Image 1 (cartoon, helix red, strand yellow):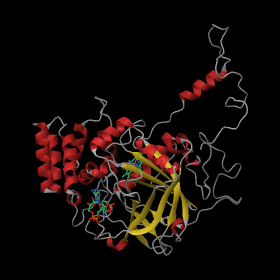
Image 2: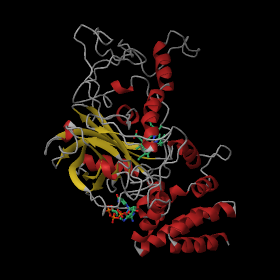
Image 3: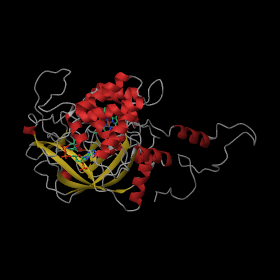
Image 4: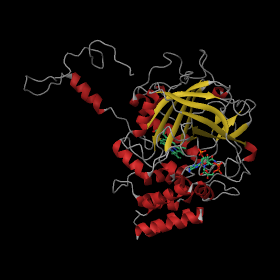
Length: 487
Ligand code: NDP
Ligand code: HEM
C-alpha cells in the first residue's frame, strides 16, 4: 500500500495545471523546441538532480520501522527514559546494509552487514550504528580511510584487488579476528532477518545517581542464524541482486515480522582498568563467561518505508546521537566516528538533514537555535533564535548526557593500552576453534580462494602468518590450501 497523489489535474512543481505531458512545445510541428516550455525544462532539470552522493561506505541497504520493548528493569544501570520501565515501547527505524559495494551492488555478498538503529525516544533520537559482527578490522579511526580504500575499487584497475586487501590485512594483524569471522559461515547471511546485530563498541550507561557502567549491545535474531555458502551466494546474486531487500520487505508485507532478542553485557567501571582485555578495543569481544549477556528487550520490525529515497537513502544515523543516561567510551574508533557521521551527513544530505521526517525526533521536538540553510523547513517560525533570551525560549539542563571519564598522561599519538591477555591473535584463535569441522573446511576454502589471487608471495605469506599465530592448525591448513591453488 503506497500513498497516492490526490486526484485532480496534473500540475507543475508550482501547482499550475499541465495541459500536455506527452508532447513538448516546438516552433511548428517539425520545428525546434521553445524556451517558454518550462514544463519540459522543469522536468529535465529536476531529473538531473534526483541523486545525492551515495554513502562512502554502506551505500547499499534496506530499512524498516518497528518497535523496541523493554523486558527488564534497567534503572540501576541507566536513566535513559526509553529504558525506564518493563513493557515500555519505543518506535525505531533500522537500516541494514553491506559495506563495500556501491549503491547498485548485489545484496548476497561476503561483507559485514550494517545494523543501524534509530530509537525515536522522548528525550531525542538515540542512534546505535552497529554491524552484524561484534568486532571490527582495525582499532584506530586514523586507519579507516586506508582500510576502506583497500576494500573499494583500485585507482588504476577500477576493481577491488586481492593485492590491496591482503596487503593491508597482512600488515594490520589486528584484523585477524574480524577476517576470520568474515570468511566463516556468518560472512554471508542468508537474509537481514537471519543474522545478529551488535553495537560492537563499548558504550557508557549512567544511572540517576550518577554511577557509570560500560556496556556492549547484542541483538540475537529470533529467526535463527542462516547463512549462504560462497556458491549459493554467487548463484543468488545472479538471480536476484536485491535478495536481502526483497526478503525484508515481503516478510513485513506478509505480517511475518522479524524480531531480535536484545541483550547487554555490563562491566562495572572499576573493573575496566584491570580486565584481561582492553575493554575499549574494537577488535576484541568480552567473553560471555566474563560478562554474561543479560536480556533487556525485544526488537520487532513491522512497517515498511513507503518511499525508499526519502526514508532509506536520506536517513542518517550517527554514533554521536546519544540521550541522557547513555554516552561514548574512550574507544579510539568510536571517538573518530563521533565526528565522521555528522560530517558525512552535512555533505551527503545537507545541513538540515535532521529535519527530514525519517530523521527528526518523533516522540519529542528538536528545540535548537540552528536556523536557515538549504532546505530549511521553517521550524520554530518567528521564535527568538538565540540564547540566553528573556522571551521564554528553551534553556540548558545543566546535566551532561553522560558521566565524565578519568584520564591520565600526556597528549600524543598513542597506541591503545594493552591489557594482560591482549594480542591480535588470541580471540581469532578462539573463534577458529569454536567452529565446527565443516565450517573450518569452508573457512579455509574461502580464505585460500581469495589469498591465492594475490600477485606476490610475500603478501600471501604475511597474511597466512597472521592466521598461524591465531592457531597453528589454522595456519598450516591455510598454507597448504593456498599452495595447492598457486602451484
Ligand atoms: P562464548 O561461547 O561465550 O560466545 C560465543 C559466541 O560466538 C556466541 O555469541 C555465538 O553466537 C557466537 N558464534 C558461535 N559460532 C559462531 C561462528 N561460527 N561464527 C561467529 N560467531 C559464532 O565464547 P566467547 O565469548 O569466549 O567468544 C569466543 C569467540 O566467539 C570470540 O572470539 C568471538 O569471535 C566469538 N563471538 C563472541 C561474542 C561475544 O560477545 N563474546 C559474540 C559473537 C561472537 P550464537 O549464540 O548466536 O550462535
Ligand atoms: C556508514 C565512517 C566504522 C557501521 C558510515 C559512513 C561513514 C562512516 C562516513 C557513511 C555515513 C553516511 O553517509 O550517512 C566510519 C568511520 C569509521 C567507521 C570513520 C571508523 C573510524 C564503523 C564501525 C561500524 C560502522 C566500527 C559498526 C560497528 C556503519 C554503518 C553505516 C556506516 C551501519 C551505515 C549507516 C546507515 O545505514 O546509514 N561509516 N565508519 N562503521 N557505518 Fe561506519
